[in-house]
Length: 325
Length: 252
Image (cartoon, rainbow over the protein chains, first blue to last red):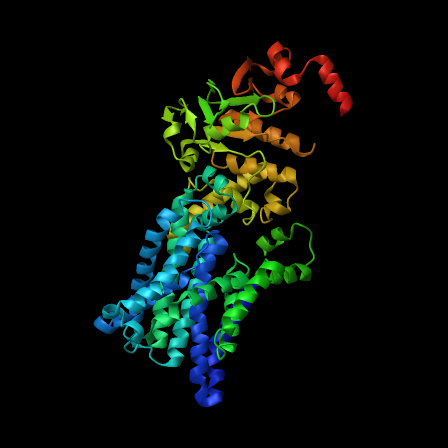
């Protein structure tokens, strides 16, 4: 059933540009808003892989998005790099950064990774601001028209589909990873580090691997964002953005792809709705995190599961039925 | 071997020799150092002096996660399961070392799928042996406690270890679950060495070949379970004298 719901949602998203044609000029704006949401949702899914699945916290995920966005933008501006290459380079650079940060931090138990990533998230946009010669400082960088494998994807509709496909591919990859040896090792570490090690999971190394995977996806999302906006500037990647991604995962309920995407919908909608009053969206987001943690610690994921269980009142063995279905 | 935590010596110069097949029991009062011994053998506890060897391999040179590959698997006193994974997935984590697929598994390559299929078949066999197959899709937290303990043992068994360490596997099991686990452990004892902590003398007399009694981290006695019952040292530190036992039973 969840698979069918996901398929329907993807189909609806694929048809959305057609529907938006009816509103004339304003469709460009709405296409951008939804495409931007797709990119944010990729980051939310990547962060959920780290936080929800593996139990490690990142408070500076926008730093990885920035790394991906800036590397794609710089290489595009100077060498005409295309979108796919930009995603790969951006993802790899973010992955390398996470390796450097994560290697010492994940050897320690507790929330050291959260602290290290917080520092990283604060530093990255400041570096982007101050390192004019490379990043253009507060002027930012304008990108050339996006090309993808020789194809011009420089229209709002085409970029919309690029972002949608990227989100679907990311969700599928993360879902499939969850069904494999590595994905199970991630979950085992979250549940019990001692038991995971006793089962042969190298705990520190596997945490770093989860961090690298997460950062890679965030970096690739950053590259897409750069091409989508056609412009990168430090203010898009501050600590506020990191908190935004954090809020998406918390509201989503942690540990589910659907929850992370749902959380991205809610948080992005709040952010856009409150964007006209400066500071208000952060206040609402902060309040939302507090409310969710206090009253719905399971987030959207738990709400959905509760509804599903209520719909099918089987005994404690409903998991068996689910597996067989 | 000796295990010290600061000023406390939990295991004191203990010498233990386990043949490569059979069931061996470790008994002793609370705080005797039984679990510490199991933790030392499975590399969960690192402050070990002395030497531990398995089939010529220096166990103390292994990282905790390498113990399984060397052939040491264990269960936990309070069934340390993975609650966010299903019953079947818990067993598959037990096969982590036996599998190789890395991140490429997410791409569902033919090699990854073949390995996954083989692992699932292996896990299925163990689950069927313990009558847990019907529950494979359930969350461990939804199972009764006894089933969780069975699952914990199953997860250790699935890697086909040379040395299986069980920390009070029967504690908390119902009368229906006990024979199931007993059969399973007996079968395992024919394939590998099983070292288990257990308090029930009656249970041990049926299955264990040898029993080591420890107290305050030292070996107090060793021998066949039947002989241990009357060993004066064992009675003193563990079973209690006849009068104490009678009082204890009356209190129950």
